Image (cartoon, rainbow, N blue to C red; front, side, top):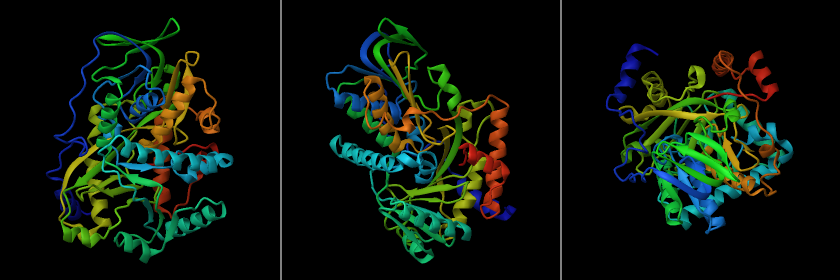
Length: 472
């Protein structure tokens, strides 16, 4: 990047606040009081993100008489659930291609369950009056290189052959630029119904209010410190008290799991995003975007972008940063060198928006597993269930994961628990320094593939054969 371009593009960041746009809201709800003393309950949910909130809500909907407690270490929605891009996808498998590669015999069932899950989220938004800017506008996967356009066309044809292309349309260069106008767009795949846009923090806060209305007892600023058997149930110790529960659901995702043996299955990968000031009517018209879809590009190091309710553009992705040792620390949430890179990419994509300023720039940790989609399990003779590893596509899939955890805790055989995806786990990550070395080599190889028409080197081909992956 030339110094003059760097200066021009980084100037757009001069007033960007290093806080998540979604959480920077004066209407943010006050936290519930921390737990002090001892409590008992039927079900304890650990974690106040989407995973925990959906679990608590569905548990009460299934059985209104069930006594449910939820504890959250900080505040509801403060971590990944309040920092993501707000893409609420039907896919349970981190995209159709990943699901087809891993579970080809189950892919039609997985697609059906995913579509049903997104429908249920839409119904819950209406039923509980969740004020979260829910818009089922779909998503376009765009090609910005000629080889990517051919790959999208071939992939769409394969989807049609397999009977998996319902609602998905291939767009040539003119058609995709009619939807959203960027000189870099050469083609696109438009999934018209399989993705909704949401305000991620408002979704978490709305779920919190719905849980409280149904009688869930929520304690914020209450980290769960230990998990141990207690009689026929479990006991979880917190800084000022303890909860004794018949059953426990763990929705801690990127944070260290209370079941120690699960920890090697996930690593934290830091992702970053920018948010512009609201576009003027003329600026919005210069881009088009009348149908307000989410967008993502087709590179290994990809970007995701969408409009907010007040016509800001969120622009995120590309860099995926793994900290040595897999540590989750607040200082990793801010990375100016990535913000500068993202600003340059933004104005390359939308040169007609030069002069637009960014108001917010932030990052956060994604719980990544080696198969790129959630895994599930139980511990302590079925009294504890967990779900983790959503790898950045958990806004919608966490609701499905909540149902899986509740099925497992009930000891029920359902269409969900019979899935191979639910019954089997991914490969765990190796210890350091092997994890860091392998991830660094994979990232270098992916960047090299992007620069060489998608050609994958021996390392990536080997990872493909082993069913391992890593991207932004």
